Length: 300
Ligand SMILES: Nc1ncnc2c1ncn2[C@@H]1O[C@H](COP(=O)(O)OP(=O)(O)O)[C@@H](O)[C@H]1O
Ligand SMILES: [Mg+2]
Image (cartoon, rainbow, N blue to C red; front, side, top):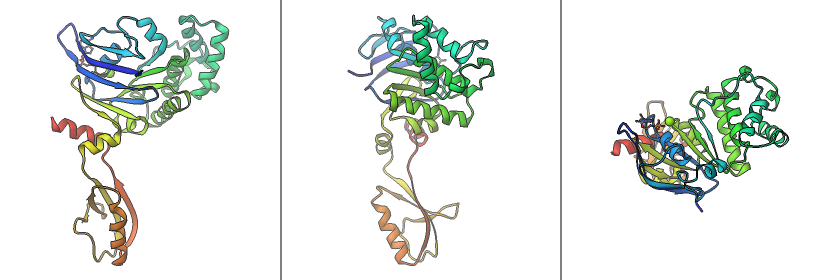
């Protein structure tokens, strides 16, 4: 069974805004799926359709085989959702917040206390457990909001721009924790973000969105192979006498050339060394998710 299964899913809002257009894709459990695109691409609308907060205009979706439009409670029991600004209570401590929200799911106080301690540790908040939320930094708040969503042991976590409001250090922190959740807890993650650079560090598979449509789907290497035939070999060296013709000086005093595969690297290095060059650094620069995204939008 697929974790997420979407077939020809579309959503047009009451005002006529076509937010999601004929979306189809599936992926399995255990993935960290990066659902990427700029503001307005249709990411949040898709999450709302997948979690039963909106009903599709046409098409269908299934979460672990369940239709969220028909059985929202069952889907809510299996999923957690984290948004950019989670609303919790400033006057309660971290621990009290978790226990309060667990009680809404019908979990008893003893059971929720044990689970709250567990998730606080998982998100490295155990030292702040008894501090009021008002004293938390924005990074800590976001970690607590992740903790809150883990209380009922969801199998799928929807994270909608979880790091958009955070400083770079907190982003790294939260991203590391997201990755740990996927690896150690086996939770499937559906991560929506416009921060392509950060997504590249943690996702196993990507869907790239623009104007409600899916532009491409695949792993980073699949997307690279589909859109780019070459990477760039960059070499910092001096005393170059004889070099491959394609090797050209760049603006930073290094030399670059396009290469189709990494097997080319030893050949180039050998030739340079044999001709007396001093090599200080050799690097392959591969297309990033940003390169891939811009290439796709330009293609259109
Ligand atoms: N409740 C709504 N009513 C009408 N239009 C909406 C509503 N919510 C979002 N939209 C529009 O739908 C499009 C997709 O929005 P959204 O799904 O929020 O994108 P993203 O999360 O990728 O930024 C945008 O053009 C947005 O303005
Ligand atoms: Mg959004």
